[in-house]
Image (cartoon, rainbow, N blue to C red; front, side, top):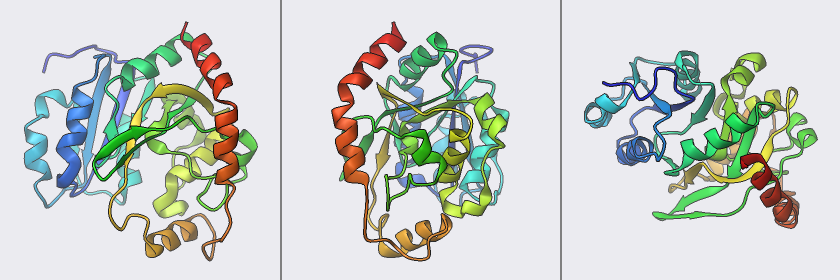
Length: 260
């Protein structure tokens, strides 16, 4: 493969295990970026479905391909980040999508603002194959550091709309595997003890909702993984949404300043 850049600015990391249903769509969203200032790292946990055949079609466009068993999705992501040559990380799972300008948008922020290490963009969604965007949400540092950014309180941070510098990941110590299937929640807690999450009006990724994904069983597992014994019956996400909407003009002005 002829390298786009010897030292790409952005490293895109995608973990996969038996994700044949959406994998090709995810890969295509990555290799069709409007900027080529990135490398693509795909970590497969020895899939037993058609994933490998799909991956083989795109091997020339995958800079680093790792195929070996791992302990979890988060172990796979950690392996990918450890191999990354880029200064900035975008992590997108094999059933989600990148916006076509994700690399361009993210690079524009980080290159012009060396003091910023962590950003959250416009929340993107895919529901019943319909792709749409909402607004960036505000996540105060206190909320993140105290673990209130969860489904029962302020609402989880949408991982697909996040990007961060590799040095921040290394400084934080990476994933804390005690959170099991919510290690991103734990990672954001760690990040928030070091720096601020900057909400900006740019597109990065889209989270795909799938049938059974938000089932009662799954929600119990998620809340258990972050230390809650049962699903609470209250939420401050509405406050988050209203506050984010009120502060949208501020986010727009801030984004304009950061990108000029």
